[in-house]
Image 1 (cartoon, rainbow, N blue to C red):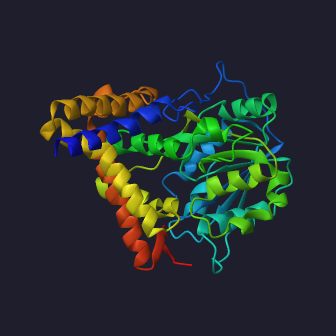
Image 2: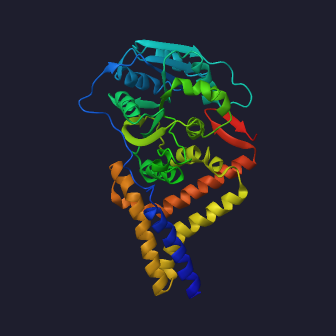
Image 3: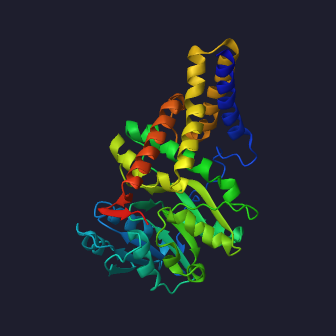
Length: 374
């Protein structure tokens, strides 16, 4: 039994030490971009913004106002995706220089709602650059100019920013920073931003890209069944030999509130099993890894031998150390790192929920639509 505890504690410590020491540093927050100071409003007529909106009457006004603050002559196409809450009427009341609102057509088979809305808007674009943002995103003044600048400086064809999620209530502070942290473990930004790596990532809340690329990949039709469409888009663009870049930011903010555990649970469960390619074998492997990583160190510290406890301390310290940069970036207390075993357990349970729903025939559910197994 002593050997077993030591082995399990060593396995847990090895996982966290590997995360800390791999050269691409997935825990790092060094890839980030914020608005420049002082903020300069520039000519933005070369950009068309696509906003898919389905029942977003409580956020769309703020989203459009944030776009208005970016610069002059920005073209905006809002696709009202069969809303029933008057989203289009609210948008019409916002004083926007170049706003075109189109009524989305009914969703065809084998399409997700967001991608179908984007495809309808894409057909109207006449500018060399396209900005894709969600209808619950607020851009801070100057961030679009900053995106244009880094795009030109680094010769990039697609740039994306992971929006700052709302982190005000207990559950948001507990789980939303971890959402970003785990995303960066799955899609290390340094690898994604490297021309040599095949890893590709983007955050769908804010993506600026060359319009020609949408035509070259065959439009959003080639992505129509994708639930993690942002990363799928980045892979398509990178497969063309183009360069992509993703970073964190404080200047792109999500307005969507997750006021309780159920709301966050459903948000994560919507796509979690997709990350495992709907594989039961990968789910079991993922479960074993998370149990060893998050709970074996705790168990070994409580019940193990002296050697096992020493290894458990190393594992727990490395675990919390890897999470610290994310907490600092979002100005949260370092003490939240102590909850990492609980966070890992909750995300594991959310993934199992996602798998169970998939096996029940519900691949994903969002905004009143259920996407069944294909």
